[in-house]
Length: 233
Image (cartoon, rainbow, N blue to C red; front, side, top):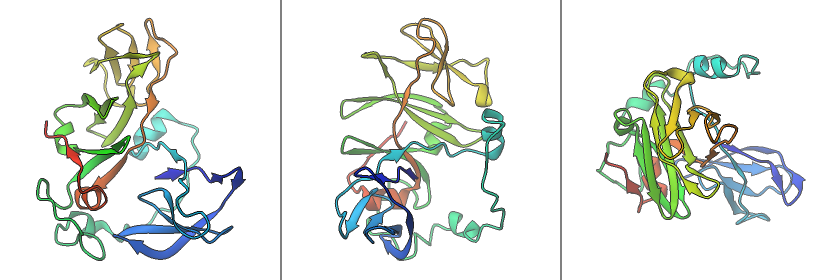
């Protein structure tokens, strides 16, 4: 998760508080000592309680895919063994304090793309998206495109409305990887799947707006969103 650090016109810096709320990191800002929930992206205790941080859409992908897209990228070199490697696949260890809301629609550690559509949460299991890499969905009045690249495990969510018109997308099967293109049924324009940029056709130069989402274990998503909808394919 990536957040903007400007709050009420002032730049803030953040640290790790050492606290958890339902297994999720709690941050604090150095300026006011307010505590912030990583999952809720808002202040939960202190002077700025209730204030929300701006969410910056982030692409979680492989280093190879990212480098191909951005060959001149800068990176933070912190190469080390992952201490949580065994934890990821152990269904008997839902976080540090256990799950709060057991939901057996999926296994505890199944990965989902979680999206909050104007107060209506919905989860998209990666297993389901593998067979349906482009999903045109509508939830709570929001027309969304969920794109999943299987080789890199990259899941991206876009607003599929452009200039007031809702578009319907499919994959150009002659393309693959970070060069995968999508084609909309309405204009036949071609769009780069990883960036949302139209590169050919009537809408060339337009860019799909990203909808904030994040990759989550099922137990974590349902702990915070017990009434979540679930895409079942």
